[in-house]
Length: 495
Image (cartoon, rainbow, N blue to C red; front, side):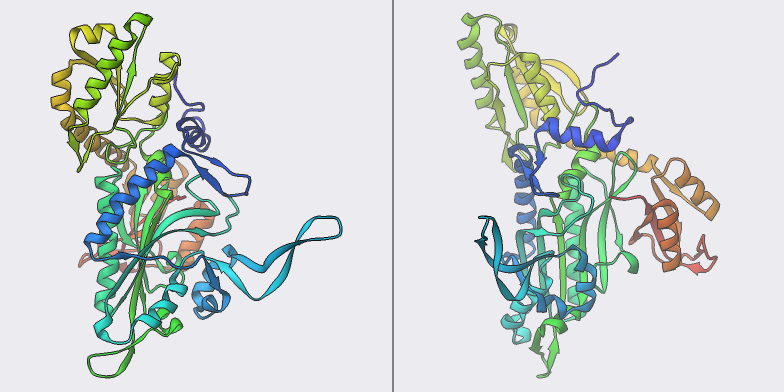
């Protein structure tokens, strides 16, 4: 029987397989604080690459980075009723300013605050307070701000990267003169997320609008990208919200318009988080461990010197260094190709398996025979194919090899999604689909909130999005109510 790097296999226990991939790739671990995680260097390096690419994309669209406080006065959240109702059960609350020792020497909270502070679950309200001071005239608009930060939302059931009490993210906040501009901003940033997911993460996504039931608290419209994982569940990978004037009225963001009269600004917000790393794992990884797309990997190539005799050590090491020097002169995806030589005094098989589990795109093994023949032995992690090439030929083909790996991962994920998507034309067909295989069920749906609740209770499925590219003049009957509708939606179980 074939031996795999991860136990259990995906087909045996997908949730536990996911946890083991994280452990074996050394990405993260649970901390002593329930629901919080320690992101280890390999995992954080992936996040840094995501940050770098996204940050460049945001700045190219005119956004600037800023930072807002971790603590939010309770009154700020109370000013937006729908917002506080949506987040109330998840808020962490600070009630005291210091600790003091009691008679037994135990530390207890002291000096109660006059007003509790909320550890930010999201920053719309505190950003709005700043915007209300910055904006006076239509000439001050638009304001396009992004911040990289952490947020806290108490979670009952946590899972590394996918759902933790504290997580890292970026959150964009913008203010505009007109409704049209703010809504266009939300749509533009959703397209930015789609481009990032498909071009860099190699994850195909569906774009669309959330139903009222799934909408961000306080938003007029929530747009999203949804990605299918290998267990056929959907992952909400990013959201972009048109907030209308709801938050500007709550925070009193007013300006003098072109007609000389005061009016409220129109705002948007949008964000992605370290949840993307969870999506990366569940989309691409296999039963041998993590598989990373070349555009996000911390190292493109790992070189493993194969030394059988001490007399060969210096010569093989020098050959490995020469290869690294040649490769690092090559550019891929706007940066030089990153190469790591693993010279640790460990068993060669153990080292190789470690890098397989970490998902490095290409692993090179170089021994005395390779040095003599000027060749290199290659393992392509994405397909687990092995081949040997003259070193000159390998170097010449390297950029194209990485491009093919990146595109191959996207196409493999897209093919899986297509195989797991079904057009549903009746309620009976809908029931059968989720009683058997599951995946993406595409239906015409007239938007009945009661039906959404019933389907969630019955199958634990929700409307993941209203397909933005499927609405139009075509009218069909809703499969549940029979009412005519143009609205086409995707149903699925989700994370």
